[in-house]
Image (spheres, rainbow, N blue to C red):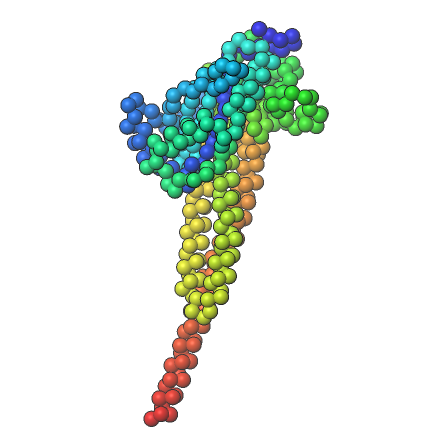
Length: 372
């Protein structure tokens, strides 16, 4: 089973994640109610299986929905994959396709992963992914708050090895297995700098566990029965997707805001009501986005599990979640400053109107007195 110089894969999985922003938010209670009406109950709340709740916990556990297996076209035939979905309250649907692997040489394992990745292709164009999303959206329509017309998406691939055909440690994997072709998807040799960058984010806690992360793929060796590493990788990708969504939302909103402010300023002396109305609209936008970004930031709490905390922090850093979060905060600050200025301007315009009214009354009184 083994290649010369490489241990073989005794048991593992190739897991493909596709995450879609399908709505502004998802009412998870309504989603559970909708899924409970299935002929076979198909919903439950997600929990991390291998970690004590006090060590790692979800702020609002996503709803897990079961879906029927699918067939992936592969090398003139088909490959069956199990399908699962997770619904996050901040509007994300995460779909996973899992293909089991047994008794496969290492190079064949890498080739299988790359072939499946090519077969699945871009989620926006592949009918398999789009049909799954359409089915879930139709079934959960009542739970979707402001559904997205063209959902943003993220993808991630995990090569999960549960057992090699011989005893392996993290040190042996690093020394004996070239992970670069698997992590990069490239067939040609990479430069030393590129190889070093791909292997930079790696973690190990016990002698026999090992995780190497890149921005779109990960290798995870976890010989223990359950692992929560892949779950925290999913959460990090869900957070990235939502921060991208809010970043694009505010990018679209800022030019509109500037145009509305300019139009309101041209309205003249009697524009105080329009200033106040625009300020209230911006305040509502800031409140909504702030509430949902806090949900995203607090989606997962990792406290006492050192290994998961390191993997989660590494994934968040690698995926640049904080970069998008900072950009969102910066744009929210601009909008906050704008609506504060609008309220001040509305007050100033009202004062001007009041002054004009007082002067007009005085003039009227003088005219009446002179007329008499």
